[in-house]
Image: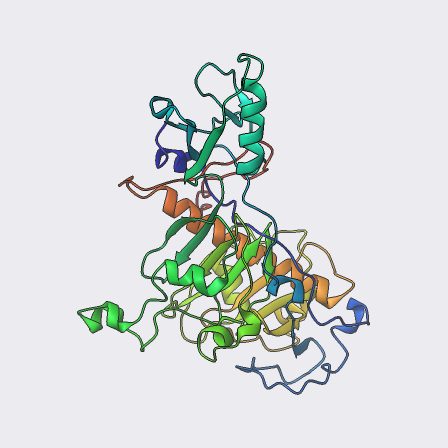
Amino acid sequence: MSARGAMGMALLLALCGGCNNYLPLEKPADWLPQASPRPTTEKPTGSLAPPPTAGPVESIIITNKLDPALLQAPTNFFTLGPGDRVDIQLLGDPASKATTMVAPDGKLYYDLLPGIDVWGLTLSQARGLIQHEYARYMRSPPQVSIALREVASKRIWILGRVQAPGIYPITGAMTLLEAISLAGGPLSLTSYQDQDAAGIGEELADLQRSFVVRNGHLLPVDFQKLMTDGDASQNIYLQPDDFIYMPTAAARDVYVLGAVTQPRLVPYHSGMTVAGALAGAYGALPEAYLTHVTVLRGSLSHPQVTILNLKQTLRGQTNDVAVHPGDIVYVPLSPYRYINRYIDVILNTFVSSVAINEGTRLVGQPQTGGAGVFIPLGSGIQVIPPASVPPIH
């Protein structure tokens, strides 16, 4: 199987590492319909219009911080894995030079040696193991040279509005800015000969909604500070399988997730409300917990969060809440005791959904060469086809 063909099995090792760095609120969820917002020095990036009765709606701004450990360069050496290609040679014997690949079982097959398990070994360790194995067949084991030719086992995903979206190898310490540079940087109007085709302002990537996923969890990187302000405190070091996504700034959709009939992007129209957005996802499930329906707006690193009691809205007791393009509307299946954990669930659901959709789209593109990735056994990653639209009665 070609390296690019492996992309058919590949997808979303990106769903990468987690953090629970959201500002904790000590009070349980039963405060949500009644309490006043937590004091904050930040101003909302956009205001959700509250109904006349403040009871069923509360709006706060969540601030999360990066773990300082994310800014430390990794000290571990590169280790071999399936798909990596290496050059091996017995010193003093030019005819012995060969390029071989670490097989899917993690073994190297070279010369008269049986399969040697090198999965997880550094190059130095692999060389020592090969020399040790040769000692079984030769009175004087030869000196072995081994060099890395191509990396396929350790990749990062860089998708969205960048010059060259794709999957890139990572062999050592790499920062987020270095990775974005590998992909040519964010798209801008300078990338287009016909500016009318872009249809928006100078920057085509939405920095507020850009994100990094690690092990299925959102890392709280503020792309606006990193790319616009040059804030080095946001320039984290990446790990293999990290997923970087920079969405388009021209998006005109609302994300409806959680306990709804069909979680999906709902096209925005002027005057859309939370109830209208839910209707676009064919309504909430019968077991949905409608008293804690949540709208997230603005930057993923410090979103404005509005929680409303949709039951009262549907009964006509309060006005509905307007939504804006790019908002995330989330319907829970159960109440959440602490707001920071609840927002954590919403954001991780959002970024994982986007990563799966974008990864599936990349895998489905025509295979025109280049390298792919594979899904290791036990990763738990599945590609699920989109559900058919339920009939409208």
